[in-house]
Image (cartoon, rainbow, N blue to C red):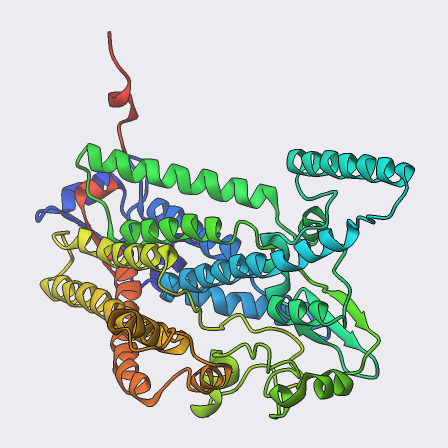
Length: 491
């Protein structure tokens, strides 16, 4: 088995023991496959890193609800594709997770108005009521107060409040609209809010606990991931303290670990691997809803009939790939499911600042291996160039996206109005905003981002390949284990 792994990794395979390899190396390196009797071997390094990467990428992915007609193989290969994407560009998957969290929080704020209206409608006071009615009203108010205190103490199980879990569940396609005489399709939080506010749907009677019951989150998997990543970090710290060589594969794995920890926090309230959505029925047909919506719903839809509320734009599968003549995503209309690749609109708040700093820190982690001992000088120079290219491409991407994001939301016009007091209140009307939304990806951004994407892909591919190629020749100290007894105080 070890020989097969060695051949797959293009490692020259003189099957030597650690002692023989130490005798055969006169230049301070150990070449070929190294077994582990006298220390850790090649298999130990590969197994520890690959197992950690697998757990980080597979367990951390929280994908959207699949279509009803999809089989298990569709779900498996979709998750495999996203796993590969998480390996090639984990910072971009983290950007998707952050964007989804931002949208979920916006949804919670949006639904607060509905909850206030529900509370107001449930409490009416009749000024002409009798004394007995007033007493009953006081009792009812006290009961409501007690209920609110109980709700604060026991969470959302008793009061059907809209929480961030509801928001994640809705935006991942957890709610499906089944209108009269119409094909069902998923609706997100914005569309659900619009339908409830106009009386087409009732407020979902679903607690946060019931939403979480939909999740297939496996506590054992998460525990195993936490234990493995924790032990891996301890190993890296121990080697750094004892000045033992760390391989490029271990540095790259450490970057996956850090991205995974942040992704866990961003997706902490998103249900995992939900297979079946919640169906919401409406007595109105889609045609009636669109007619009553007026001129806003006149344009033909591209994704679902409720595109005039939120059109899930932009998406790589449904918008970018068709222009590149690639195989597109779901071809059914209305969309049977929400794609996982809707570009995040994070804004300019603390989330954007945090994501930018973390992305640059992730890219900068590759510079830790700047002075590592590579098998050849060419590989070291290519690592330097690739590390610089990844950091530069990420920076250019953020500059372009920050500018375009501000243009989409009218942020620059608002700031201009505040700075120069030209009479505009900084807000743009709905028609202008819709016009900008249709141009989510302008030509100039495509021209700039195309070469940036190519350079980033080449640089990232080299790093992924090099971390395995470098295993064919490592410094002797890379196979030494951490002496944990040195950390124990001796009296």
